Length: 590
Image 1 (cartoon, rainbow, N blue to C red):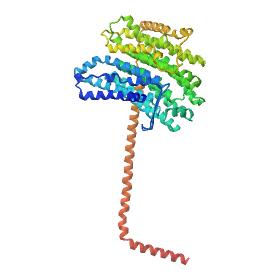
Image 2: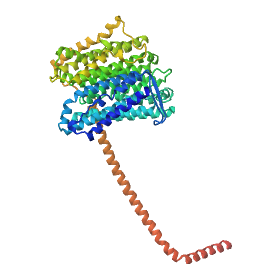
Image 3: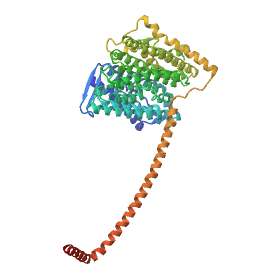
Image 4: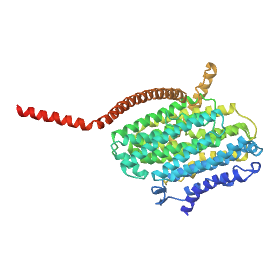
């Protein structure tokens, strides 16, 4: 049964993609349904697979030998990933109703956009599933690369200038990340002589240059995870991508980087080298910097989805700091890992609900506005740790850190939660300012509500090992909840101050606008060097040709004297003989 579910989880999305191609050639555009049942249900077999229990598959005929499995990490990861993709697909069915009507009415641009998205959506999901269940390097990298490059179509969907910019930023950073990942995996696998991710992890822990291998993999996966400095694609891509695509980008695909770290870094290993411990401390600093820096940049943004993008960077910064403790303080990792998984799952569904909520405020159903915006804010409030699953996930992390006396990290993560509360407040406020009537489609608001409820009750449905969920005692509630009201008050104070003072908001993408001119100057410098090298090459070729012509002239003159020597050869030989004879006589007379 598990094998059948595995086949269905990988093949059913491919059937959905094949159905898109079939419709493109066989169904007239006026009758074409871009999001049929097979498309909406593409992720359901994977969701069922996650609840089938732990399993392992060995496939000798697959590339270098496939090893796939569901374990204590991959099972919950597959569960929240497949659930988010499922609700996002249903949400997309309602989100694209107007665009589908245009396509059916003969709008060829809308038709091309919908065909492209409908085709690459299930392909992106297949890559996401494969990288989760893969235990061998080849399968993992294939899934990661497929997910990465197929997702380009999700970002560039609208085809606007801003969408092309966001997609270009995403693709450039993705290519850089893929190169770093490939380099790190090949280096570690070659050193350890292994094809398995577990072997990579063990090889990095034991290798002389393990810290450099881990650095490449941390930065490579960090492109997806939004590591500070490599995060610039997120605030550029999210505002321009369709809301369902933003939901899976920020909720599921960004977690692929985190999962990559869990799979290949020697987290919790004993007797790590000083280099790996140093890398853990660097990761910790980078994570905290992202948690606070993204909050400072995000509160200035005017587009709700740009605010949410910076919120994702901030939350992933917190997760980066947690992962860093697995290298900097390995003893805490076994206690911390369940909390990290629950934190990631809750963030995925909560952030998916928040991105879907941006379309609810754009096309408000006829509900009481206070109720509607309270529901829109709920996932964000939970992200701060103030209620429901957010409180449990935050305590799961703090409980492990308390056990190992890492109070300084608890303090920093608590302060970072103030930034999360401020960002959520800014996002809801921007949605209120930009709200529009019009009525949401039932698929649209229905999927949003499902994501919202799933985010609030994450510990109830996530298949974690028994004993992984630790509810906070009443005495700790205040310590978990207080960052939310403080963050709201901070937002109110900053908003009031900005209203009085004014000022220009920093652009979304922040460092991108520094990288872009630097890259342009770098390209110009490379072109100038290339032009100079071309001139030097031309001069060298000219000199070589001149030398060659001179040498050939000399050789030609030498060859022309050959005929004269051949004609007078006998006389010359006789003269030579006479000279030799005279020399011999002379020598004898002496």
